[in-house]
Image 1 (cartoon, rainbow, N blue to C red):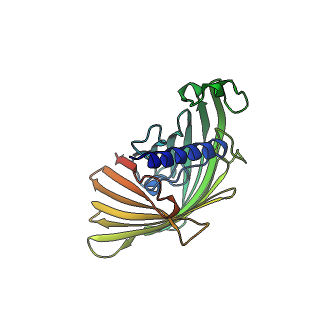
Image 2 (image 1 turned 120 degrees about the horizontal axis):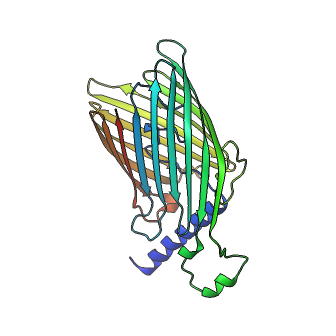
Image 3 (image 1 turned 60 degrees about the vertical axis):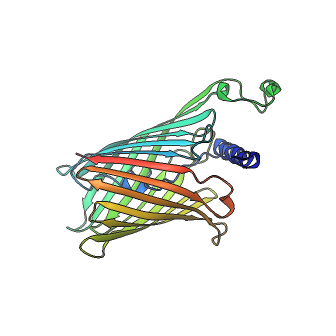
Length: 299
C-alpha cells in the first residue's frame, strides 16, 4: 500500500470517528431485514420458533482500529398470548478509543387482522453504555496530552436509558414497517444516538417452483441525515440466495455511493450469510474491504 493511499485511509478513518463522536448515528446493516428487532421491536415472532441471530461487520478490514460492529438478537413467540419476547445487544467499536454498547429487552404484540394479515406493535427498553479510553490513543505530538481543551485525559463512561417503538404489517408475501429508535434522546451526544426514524417494505414473490425474489426498500432519517437502501434478493429452493444492495448518495442521486454483494445459504434450522461492500462514486478512494458475516438458527 503506497503512502498516499495510506494517508487517504487514515484521514477517512479520522473523519469517520470524529463525525461519529459528535453526531452518533446508527449503522445500517446490509442483512438487517433477516432480523430487525434492534431497529424495530415489532419485527419479531411471526413463527413459533426461537430465533438466534448474530452479525459481525468489519469496516476497512486490515486497517488498524477500523470500525467494528457486533449484533446479537434473540426472540421467541407464544401463540397462546399472541406475543413475542426478545433481547437485542449491539456493540460498536467506533475507532481507536471509543465504543458503545446498547442492550434492550424487546416485547411485541401480534394482532390478527384477518387470516392473512398481521399487525405487530413493539416496544423495547434498556440502556446504552458509552466508553472512551484516551490511553489507547497514539499521539503524533505528546504535547497534545497537556492540551485540556482538545484532548480528554481521563477514561469516560456513560450509562443512559434507551427506548424504541415500532409497527409492522405483514402478509404471506410482503411486509411494511415503521419505527422510531432512541425515543428519549432528541439529539446526539458523544455516546448516545439521537432519535432515528425507519420506514421499510419488502416483498416475497414466487417466480417459479424453485425461484423466488425479494425486493426491499429501507429509508432512515435522523435530523439532517437521510439514508436510502434499495435491495433485491433471489432465492433458489429456499436454500441458496444472493442479492445486491445499493445505497445512493441522496445529496447527489447520480453518484452511486455504495454497493454490497450478498451470498448465503439456509439448511434445516441454520442460515449463513456474507456481504462484501464496494465503495463507489466520491467514496472510491477508500478501500472496498468491508465484510459482514451473519449466522442465525431456529429451534
